[in-house]
Length: 191
Image (tube, rainbow, N blue to C red; front, side, top):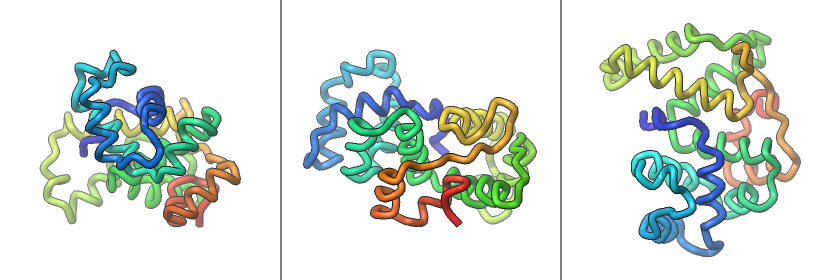
């Protein structure tokens, strides 16, 4: 449940993705950039946990996806790439995207309030003792951060409604090459 750190962290992710050298093993790049104290990220330099979260997210992207994020995508494309990275990093978020957001979108139930998150978490907690053991303050923090990520990624409006994300042809191909099932995390794009 480490997604409780920050939101989409798009600007920080872009700085890290741009410092990555194509062909470099991601583990080596991560260590090199950490050793350089991520000088291009002064606001995160002292926040090691947040910095590691950004590295972990970027590490779940293919080289082609990292290149697209850092060199080709417009802002909406960058948001979409980071949403993919987050869903690949955190199983809980991916399941929420597929089982709640996509399902609600397909059935035209576009409201996405706190009760929807709370019900989803309660259902998951029935099978996962670690979720059942979360304190109410931790649940509130997870909900707050997830809804912030959804808003920053363009998936949830300020009014609390699900918004479709229309992927560019290039972005769709990148996802299909990595894992076609990832299209399901985008309402309006995957069955």
